[in-house]
Image 1 (cartoon, one colour):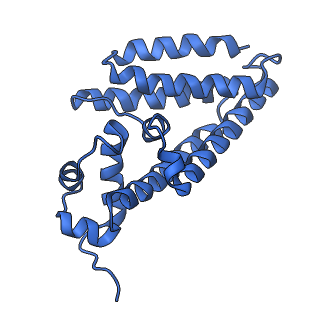
Image 2 (spheres, helix red, strand yellow):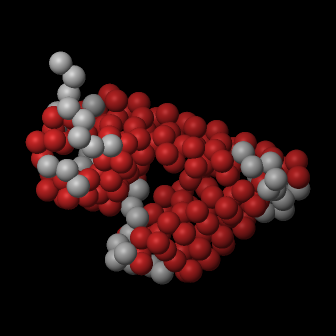
Length: 200
């Protein structure tokens, strides 16, 4: 017998991911998840069986959404490599600006998950999602830096792997710093200053 569907599962996963990315698994209550998703507790757990299962499904959805967003920017051949890096950073800054207007930081489900002791060890699916995202993130950023080598917008002596790690660190740092209430214009300036070391 199939499980009942009285809601849009994708919309629910997006809504609960918004809570998990701000508060993490342990500090997000079932009540918060139900309120964010606009569904009853029974409906939520009929569909997802447990909070842990819901978290994994939300993490999968979150990874898919951000993978697609990054790929669109990183693969935009109409932009130079440097412009793509700036656009990636700008996307994060604008998301944090929009969240701040609603009274909170946007947060990051990847950062929250990686900072939760034992979470990836507890469920191999979590480890698999995190590892795939990190691998694809680094590959994408490295490709952008190589494109910048070709078009001259990124220094030819900038190592692609080290540069990709710098960009990933800057973006993760933006997420964490935004949670401390730092204003988005300052976030942008600090991030662009950090990227300046790569530019041709």
